[in-house]
Length: 350
Image (cartoon, rainbow, N blue to C red; front, side):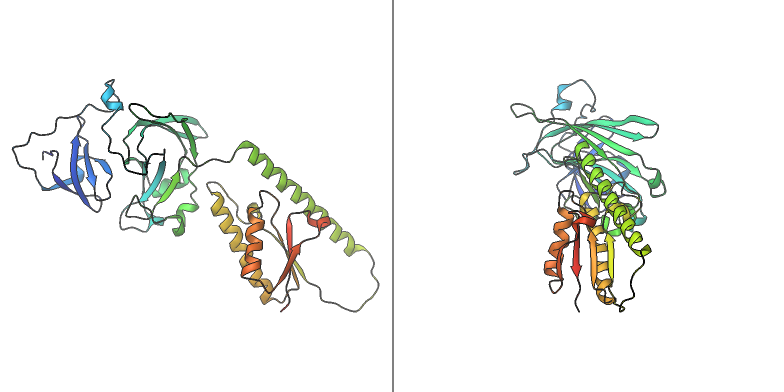
């Protein structure tokens, strides 16, 4: 079956149809789909449902990406208003009509900008790093990179993207992008990880390749803070043990209950690999709400939430919830001697 520019085709392995825009010498057929993206596919993935008249000339095959001709690196572009800033995304898309948590995943590189992208894709594991793909992504298009089989997700390597955004003619150059992507098997088995998006019909996992990564200084500061909090917790536990060992005068029984909840993520889950900051905060706040409801149901008098110092995000979210959803309960900083500045005490009065 011979495909020509202008043919209307239907995808055999996906939902939708489109028009052929070009054919390359290696047999790759580029189709402009219903979403406005130019998708590269092979002949066996398409069926012609509307042919152009025989009079027009068939599209001349274009040189393959990778040749030394300048045209390969400066393809014709169709700019989209508002897409003048560099933007690239890495997407994991489940096969159509399947449970995303039980399906193989197609990996895509999306160029959501009016720039041309030259990319280099690297796999990284305990054996080292090696390049697996490189090429050009035209503006406002996406390309398929590889398939991640569901039964191999637990053995998936990390991926490194090196990107250069450029244009033909006059433009302001941008710094190259070096982005390290960690695919967390745990996240890919949770349905809420897959989100609605503007690039695919299916819910997908989308990584922003231009999003700032946590710096070494951030990691050091967070580690030191967690270490100090653990030391404070140890001191508090030792003091509590010492107080219990001291002989006490008989006194009237008085029920004073206090529960301590450590919201540091390492105390809540075993593996944080691949989790983004928003995912960590979501887990911590789910724990907070669960413990608040439990304390209220158990008629506890006091509960202490250890949230740490850090950049204050978790503390602010906790106090925002206390002010709103739990406004009937009094709260303030917990004992500095026991917790420093890293904990909040809630007084529960039913």
